Length: 184
Image: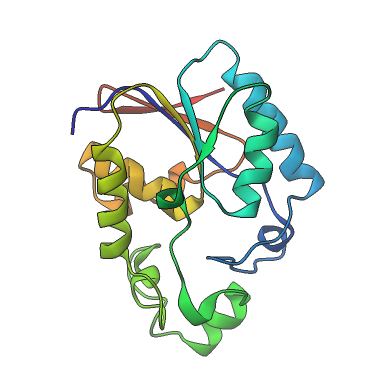
């Protein structure tokens, strides 16, 4: 997939991230560390131009308000986090004990097995449709699994090979000419 440069960010740490609680479509506010991470992203963005887009979910919007300081930006629903059905709001450690058969395989495979969840194929289709409409440098604030899927689709790389290496908070991942690098 030939794309203009993309700058992808995960929202800052939230209260639920800090305690291992899954959010999916639910939300919790940024922690003080999450606010610091968003300010770091703002500093890293200095001198980088492009259209700015954010997931509509509160934690991404809160991050965007800080990271996109003084820039025009808009909300893009296709950048929402993957729906995780009945797992939303659950503690990861508890869910792993209760549903061990779901948490098998590659690190992100369980997202495909969440009861009443969106599933990875649906997320891939949503991300593909979004990327098909990108025609200029774009700066994106989204969520961990959605960010990994965007990179997977854009590079033609298996999701498991993108995985959690590119889901850190407070970072910016640049995708340029099919290569992913992290701005520091």
